Length: 410
Image (cartoon, rainbow, N blue to C red; front, side, top):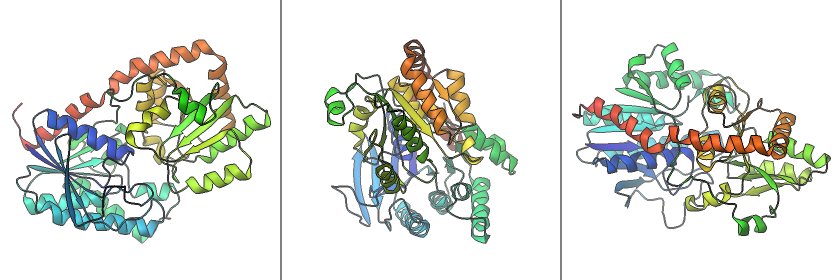
């Protein structure tokens, strides 16, 4: 079977959509299928094309057996609503046109967060007469309203109509959370065609490591207890709470606990400016690093901090980095309510606090620094739980849905 997969994020980008798509398609290649990924020149999140690439009409490379076709797009940084919409729409147009030159595809998949990629996949499916699967990673455009990027308006309502149209026309919807599935069912989408395949962790990459002593020395983290956030610094993440918690530590003159933030995004510059203005010497900012280097920085963390703004929408989200934390054996301090908090508590892999509560974040870090037995127990539970979210097994689960849609014999 030849699977055509449309995504505007793919390695060497290191965000969650890129990792999920690569790790799934790599496993499908191992299972004997052919995969073509249609994407753009890597540029997330700074809106600058990565070294070794150009923003061209068409360029092809091979990555672990995956044929990767990159098309031209209007490239914008991960900030500014209008610029990002132009980015999304340009990829929709370019990928649709390019897909028509991909021969003998049996099925097309379009992945969110934004749904313009799914629009392209729908068009490709109709034009080629092949099934279309919508991989649902985010409830967009609802997430636009949740972060305050746009208020409810006729534009949002128009986008919501398109969103529902795509769900209705998809041969299958593959959701990353059960909450998303229930949301769609509540809006009239047939639950029988919605399948849940959560995010997970590539256990071949994310496994326990001793702290990288040279890197700890370089960053001034030797002998420090480190709570870290690794991921996008966007409007949705509410990372000001981490700065507020660091300020509490500073007022207590506790310099044995540091907070590390690695990544880029629309709010990164503002966060750095606020930390400098408040004199937060225990907060360390690191720009995004290549995929191969990420685990070195994970190794520095004693605790992984997961945080999103306190909105109803985000209670249905499961941040993918929580599974990477489990794979590394790093306990979580989890500031997201809903389905993801239920996983943390059910698996016993960390402490849960209310989003935006800097004092609670502070207290959780202190508890885990001081209680070595509890810390050790949580670390062990992380490693035990990680196998339940092995990316290879989840890729196989998604492949079974794809094969069923295409009618591939088992």
